[in-house]
Length: 312
Image: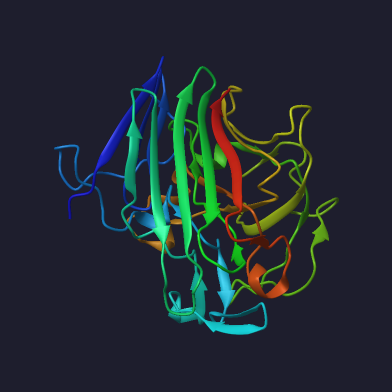
């Protein structure tokens, strides 16, 4: 299936953004990969895989991550979503990652896309989502907005499946620094919360100072971000020579899922060789049941959040 690809550039930054899931297909600076690219189905530049490996680069909304049994209560009503992760009996990653978004505006350095979240099984809340991918002097800035276009309050959450690279440097030679003070324990079978958040201090999950990734395996939600003076929290993947890739988030994204995609996962993804998933999220897994950082949009209310990627 042919899906539009939008090329944008600024200075020595280049990016490809696709209509499918409003996905970031690739991002480079001076030819060095900052994200894990996924290939087109042909060399024509206007076709992409129907389902990119491990949802790389896609927007996850109106919830990120998983909802236990696909069930949640909101405003006194129980909802049963489709089980889109049937092997774990979960509803995963929202409703728009496999849909084509509509182009609003495409210029040399930015592309804006939008999609209407209509009525789905277990989801009676219409929303209008918009995303802008924009390149500038310091790299990529991504701006998300969500508007409740319905007549009743609506639950909401958003995440992005970003996979970072430092060029072709193997992941096991890189270091990771996360400005996160807590992590949420997960049941390793269903990947759902199994207790409250815990401090990372003094544990194997403490990346507040740079740590080598050799042999490290993570599929972990982190929170309690410590922002810099500009209100942005920055997370760094660096190579031995000091070059690196930084993912930053504003205060709208209080969570980060970090995932080491090992080769055994398949899905056509090269995995641990060079890429690390560093995924901004507004809420943790199963937030529609726990209520932790769940956003509630009143009719007509708009939410905005930003994140980005910079080379260092």
